[in-house]
Length: 116
Image (cartoon, rainbow, N blue to C red; front, side, top):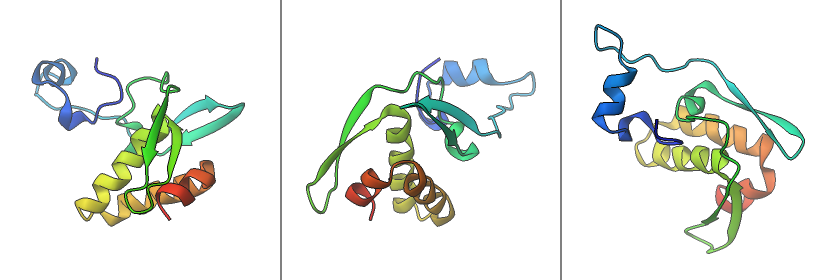
């Protein structure tokens, strides 16, 4: 299975493997937890659906498109950042707000660089 990819970006063969006999795909509706820097971080259900495993600790660099300021995020936080930006562009403001609140709690320095 492809890691850290939104379900709508998965190849059709992977989606077919995830489907039950009626063709319905069940996504997780529970939160996930990840251990990072000796802290337990809770991933909200909406974002947890896009996490395929808990090995998302590789670091990624992101740049604020307005200020040019950069910071690093672990893969799992990078996925949530990308979901926030996608929610902003598609006007899904409730999802965007969930992500912003999560960033303020778990990655406040990166929040102020990328999202404030």
